[in-house]
Amino acid sequence: MALTGLFLCVFLVIHLAGNLQLLLPAEQARVQYNLYSEMLSHNILIKVIAYLLYASIIAHAVYALVLTLQARRAKGAQGYAYDKRDSVSPWYARNMGVLGALLLVFIVIHMKDFWYQYKFTEMPLDAAGRKDLYAIVAAAYQEWWYVALYVFSMFVLGFHLLHGFHSAFQSLGAYHSKYNRWLKWAGRGYTAVITIGFAIIPIYMYFTQNPELP
Ligand code: HEM
Image (tube, rainbow, N blue to C red; front, side, top):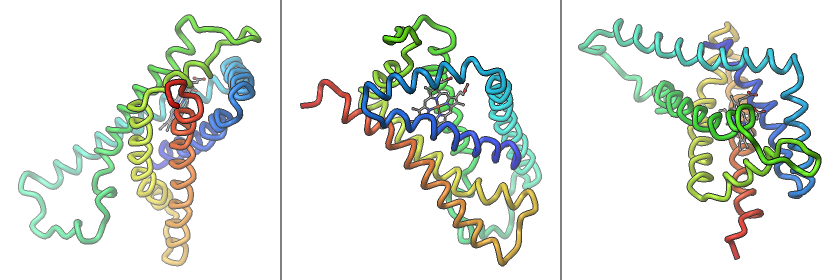
């Protein structure tokens, strides 16, 4: 779980860096984003990493399900006689399964709307004859409820990462009372950059490119 989780954390950094191009002035963003997406989709190394990514998402989810079922079976129907977890761990650490399931729903919707369209459907072309992925993304973020769905999902992602990031390092053996505090702060910093970075994109595109706004 820890290895696939950290691999997904690295993906998020790269994915965010690429998508921040959407914050450029509209015409420059269209040219640059469409060129960037085309370059990625023709690179064999990126293709191999993408398959590794899909496998990691599935492995991470399946393994989480197996662990949850095992823990439930170990606990038995009665539950623990002495259970003080509420007072020692935050709510999001105890609900990683629910947060993960919500994220999986988000990823399915997200990939259907952008990835599937880009790879498998007829797309409008930009002035340079490239698939106009920028137009698809910009059109999606004209709808306030779609922007709200993304912002909500980034909150879910944030709480999942807040526990998942440092817990993954601990699972891999990086646990020392001296460094644990630093690891927690690194996790908080990472979470803030990723969630705020992703959430800003739909909000910015909604307010700067929505023709229906005065
Ligand atoms: C504002 C935020 C985001 C934007 C604008 C965005 C945009 C996109 C676009 C346009 C694609 C299709 C491009 C392609 O396949 O070449 C894509 C693919 C993908 N996105 Fe996002 N994304 C965002 C956030 C996220 C988040 C938060 C996650 C994960 C939690 C995520 C996971 C993925 C995955 C797994 C793929 C398929 C990757 C691939 O095949 O290369 N995205 N995204």
